Image (cartoon, rainbow, N blue to C red):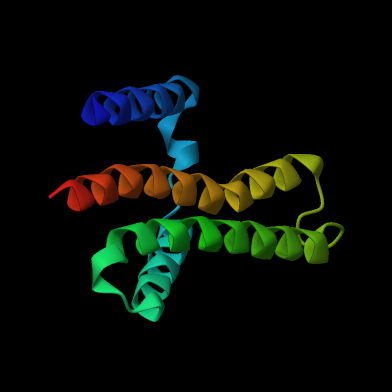
Length: 119
C-alpha cells in the first residue's frame, strides 16, 4: 500500500507540473542546494540507521533555507536588476523551487525509511 500511495502522490505532483509546463519546475542549482544540504545534514546526524530519514529531514530544512535565500536575493534587487513585475514573478517562482524539491524528497525518503525499518 505504501508504494501505491507514493506512486499516486508523485503522479499528482508530476502530472500537475507537466500540465503547467515542466520547464518551469526545473532548476539545477536549487536541486543541488537541497540535495547537498540534505546529504550534509544526514552526515551531520551521524546515525546510519536513520540516514534516509535524516536525508529527508535535511531536504525540507534546506528547501526552506533556499526559499529564504531566494527571497532575500529578490528583495535586495527588487528595484534594481529585476525592474519589471514580470521578472519578479519569475524570480519568485525559482525561489520557491527548493521548498518543492525538499518536500518531494522528504515524501520519497519517508517511504524508503519506513521500508528500511520494516526489514
